[in-house]
Length: 173
Image (cartoon, rainbow, N blue to C red):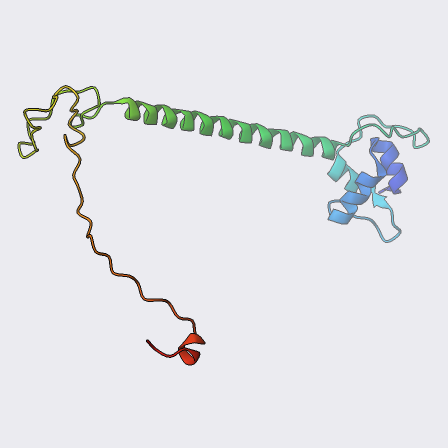
């Protein structure tokens, strides 16, 4: 078979020489002992050349290689899948938020609110306000009269705190 140099192969397939060297380094493409690439090896990796060109024609530097295009398309597909997953997560979390808001807004059956003026009948042991107090201000959440907590009148003075050295240099009282 015919053997081609890297420059001839890049001109034949209109790809960058660096792409060919990258394929060689990765093991996708192999070289002979004379540092040339077998034409059948090039067909295996790059496929049939679209147009058989004369090796003397100039190489287009701006033309993308098929491997790079394939890699970019795979990345685009991966990003589309990630975007789809993110949209699914967003809709799931939005549904969760709406459910939690509905649960927060739903009134509880046993709870009284500040607007309720009547006391629940089930708590018969609750303290009834005195007959002389105003019943309209009593909302059932606080007692009618504040409770007083007794405070002892005589408070013993705390002994003076001593440091480490005062134990040795000051006599005890």
